[in-house]
Length: 96
Image 1: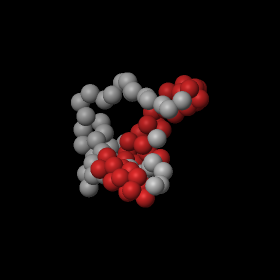
Image 2: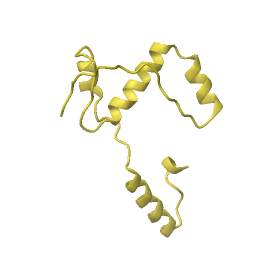
Image 3: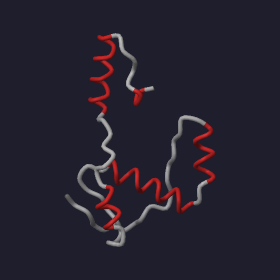
């Protein structure tokens, strides 16, 4: 597992997509620092193998959160959807 590497151009902007206006409003009420921390936590938790950073200051954060929020792959979601359709079940929540 790779915990650190270097990045010559740290990101300065982020794209945010939401399902509803309430979520957007909550996001906009957060401070920039809170949005960055929340986004970093989500990204690091979803990382399966490596996280890249500009320096080692966040090593403890990365070690604590890496791979803790694994998301199903597109193929896993489609497989669930097909199983549910055959069995008459509902769509997986990730696809609604």
